[in-house]
Image 1: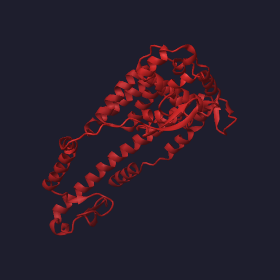
Image 2: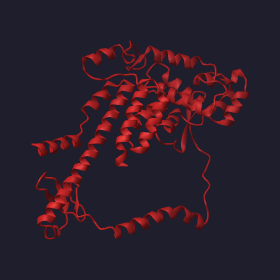
Image 3: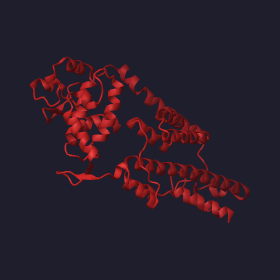
Image 4: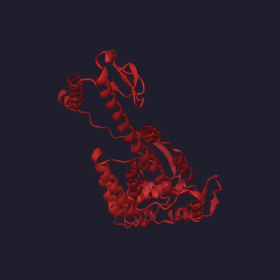
Length: 364
């Protein structure tokens, strides 16, 4: 995997250029290839942005007074209005978007899709709108209600049975603001937040779901139960993979000899004696019999190996720290978050600093 790092970085560079040229499909192709070759935080962030929104970051935070001047002319810094029920700011575009949702005539118009839109198009539209109207990001008056309406529209239309019923009903029942008793058939069986977490939080709703009926929230227990398997054979089939892993792990520990040293920062089982290499003063831990087994040339060769492993670990960790920091910058640029950008600037790279220190000492 390590030998693929250079090729993965080349793919990321190509993808970044493609995003600059408004070619998200090409960028996604090379980013996925980069992740297969050598997973990185930078490629992960870019793929997330493309998957959620389908377009490239809009904000530039290159630093200095020039960038701040550009930021003042950007979408992020457009004139803001103050909400009547919150001290947080919102833009005129956000307020217009909320009005559009409220004026929509049916669920399809809420999601901005045609009546024959396939499942994947519904999903893409929901992803984009849910991020745009989430209460943590959109503080315009009515944004929370719009967020709920978007979640309800997707939950109904993504359910084949409910969608068929919805398409067959009259215009009065289809209207999102209709107060008809029958309109309860088109309320989602999942809360907007639970639905959002399914898409973006990596989890699924709990056993108790918040159900919105006629604008009021109530809690209900899910009636569906997982069927229970019966019989000893079914149980054995379930636990067999775990048993195999335990047996293989135990055999590997018995057959593989323990390393001579440990590069951990504290003593551990079998490695209680702390030592420093003669050349780079790298700390490492050894067993109690180490001093009697390694002397002279053997000790010198071992310490050379210790230092090589230590420097190799520093290089890997330095690269990971840089990737993580760059990922923070990408998120800050996309969301126009100056606080996140400043946190990214302050984020340290201790492994890189230590590597530079060692390199300087070797050439000093």
